[in-house]
Image (cartoon, rainbow, N blue to C red; front, side, top):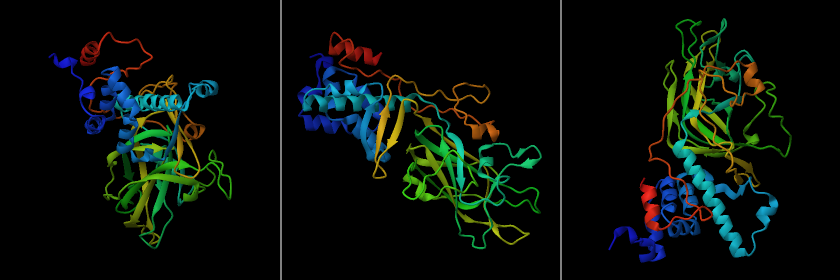
Length: 380
């Protein structure tokens, strides 16, 4: 018997086939499996296997309430027919969305994700020592050192929080780099690092019960507190060295940031300032690296907090990595960034491990002559 003609999905009970396919740990493998034949594709879609694997790989997706194809009109979405047809169309829509998400993760380079600085829990001298300085990789701008400084505290355990906005409200973050500030203009050039750092990711509450916040205004730099955000991920604590270098904090697993907000918690203080005997924490530069998934994907937060709608636009293309050596009209530069002279970001390119991408086989596409042809095309 020709081994290509054998299909284990036909030969094994559905529950056994399901267990076999759930042993895959890469969403891209599930998508490739759905490309083998119509039988495989229908099985993968009917069991929502692509979505299941993403929920396992990225627990942050557990709050997803629905997937909306923004390329479809409301009338197109409504003209589905029976409840069984509606269920099948929903499964197909989810499969297309998560297959596209798998493609983005497999093909996008690691990119700089930070777009703007939102708020610091305290600042010693605002705006000269404001959080916006941490977006600048240079140690000095003009005749001034570039850094953020907390206010002084007599208790070295008082934490600080730096909150930033990412370029995309739906992206995968892989690592965060933080450089403590070394005060060369002070005696003995002390380094004002934290004892440890921790990271939180989430989204903004656009409508607060007590007040409405204008997020486009920086005000005094301390306008935003935890009540303005919903956090969907909190990392472990990472020890920080008292060294003047960009320290790398690689997350154990990539994290899906839903909402485009990241907060760096600086835990504990190690350095006293000689002139006032108070403990300070100072940061020279912050860098967040990951894969930007806009404009193909975006999110629409829901109530209660933690629930959201995944917006999917199959007609859009993923952002290309920015090149710091070339000006690009594709970069979304905010007015605040222009005012703050944010530039000179280092670019890191690092491809994910994987095989060349295979397009998803869709029943609406032109059909192959046989399963054997599909397998040969897949192998090619």
